[in-house]
Length: 226
Image 1: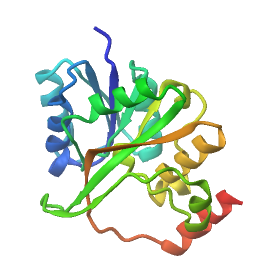
Image 2 (image 1 turned 60 degrees about the vertical axis):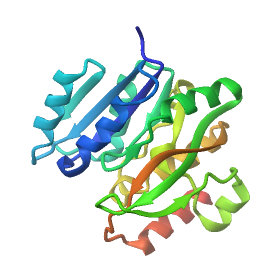
Image 3 (image 1 turned 180 degrees about the vertical axis):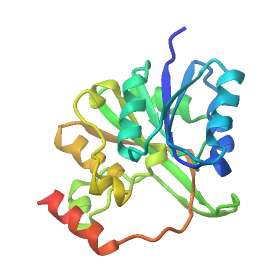
Image 4 (image 1 turned 120 degrees about the vertical axis):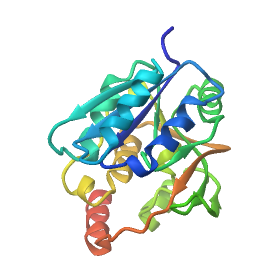
């Protein structure tokens, strides 16, 4: 049967955490899912790990780039492959809760005017130790403009197919500075799609400190908001 939801996971050299991520998708309480993995020229054991899961479960679909295209183009390619009308974003080092697909689908059914949904998430260390809990806040455009932050856990975010038909992840500097998710949310809002918060725990976000050029990121955000 056709999947009711599609998980879309871009990955590059993600063997350390990918298995836990994929297990969290395949063990969903909702069985009618598909998991689309886009391998963006991994050079570690990620391709072998992906192949293991592809053979293990027919719900796993894969696409591999043989040259690095960046996370935005990998996300877009995975979304274009998706068969379901509801698409769930997930990063390869994060973990979906067992109820994520069910809770998201139920939320969309109860809220037909909402096209972009997101939920609570917990923050864990690289070893999976709980660090904090972040509830899903109501969408507030004025707060977004003031703080230049959406307060949306990307690995809890889901969209209806009609969003993908109008909005894609932006490549270039947004991808390089790892704020393509922020830009996608901005573009979805400006395209007129309504956002809704699901007050359920949907994911565990793995916090791995990375060096970021905060000055460049702020300039990109300010330019986008003006």
